[in-house]
Image 1 (tube, rainbow, N blue to C red):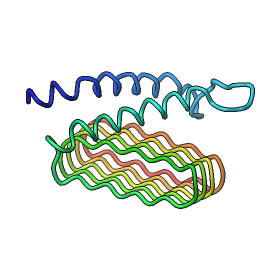
Image 2 (image 1 turned 90 degrees about the horizontal axis):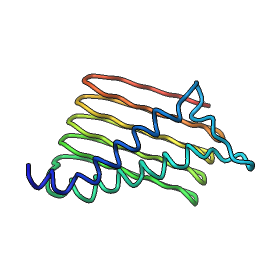
Image 3 (image 1 turned 135 degrees about the vertical axis):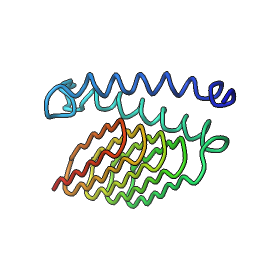
Image 4 (image 1 turned 180 degrees about the vertical axis):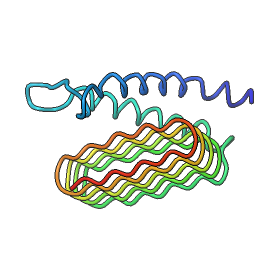
Length: 165
């Protein structure tokens, strides 16, 4: 437990920040209401980068020493695709398939028995999944152009399925 506390404190702080950004940018049914002059969503990019850092820190500090039986499968075809997965606990599964260009997928799983599946086709899709607790399942399928999906599950036995065409 000491090793976990010593090595995950930075990830915890980043996760707290990313959770705050997640909640603060989701003000209506859209992902964010902050726009730059060129149409890029400022809140989205900050959130994705923060979550990516959080996921990578979780993966690098926790998975080797603490987690067991976690599985992460990523398949990317095209160019400019990004995928980050952080799993803490045991028995978690994350699968990501991206085809096209500029797709982004971030999965953070904490607890046990969580499942996250993401399939993105086309270009410029964004999928963010945060699962905390146990036995949560999230499935995201995005087809077309520029779809966004945000999933935050906390507790036990939650199910979220999103299909966007």
